[in-house]
Each structure stands twice: as C-alpha cells, then as structure tokens.
Amino acid sequence: MLERYCGDRIGVFELMYWYRSQLDLRAPKNLPPRWWAFERYDSGASIPKSHRTAYRKDKELRNRFPHPYSTGPDSFEQYMAYLGIS
Image 1: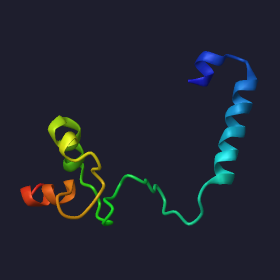
Image 2: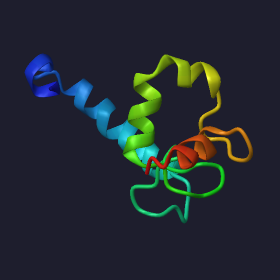
Image 3: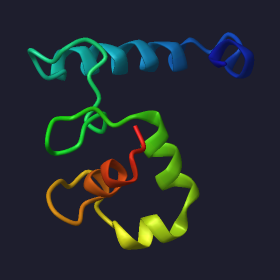
Image 4: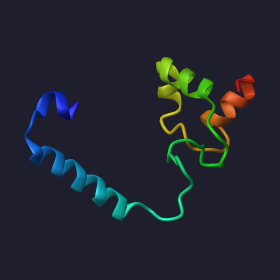
C-alpha cells in the first residue's frame, strides 16, 4: 500500500521501518508465538469461533453478557456450555 500511495517519498518508508523496530524493542518477552489477549476466557479456556460468532451476531447476548471473557456462574462461557455450543 505504501508503494502505491507514497511513490518515491522515502520518508514514509523510513518512518514505517523505525516504527517496526520500536515495536520489536518494546514487545513483551516470553509470549507464545501468535499470542492474542482475547483468545481465551478468564478461566484459560480457548474461545471457540462459534462463541465469537454467536456473541457478535446476537445483540441480546451482548446486552446480557457485557463482559464476555469473564467466567463463573451466569457468565457467557457457562451459558454457551449450558447450551452445548462448542
């Protein structure tokens, strides 16, 4: 994209390379590859795509469970388990 819109203006590319190097310098250590903060419930269980899709599509679920990553009684995780959706 940069090549398409920036042409021969190298300042934009220098900024991009500098930014990437700063991200690398400040990256948290000891994280697993491809780690993502929102891939698991607070219990540590992986969040299946079916749970994400159901939550995204259903406004009522979003209203009922405003904190979808929380665990415990009356949590979205427990509700989906009760429904047998995995």
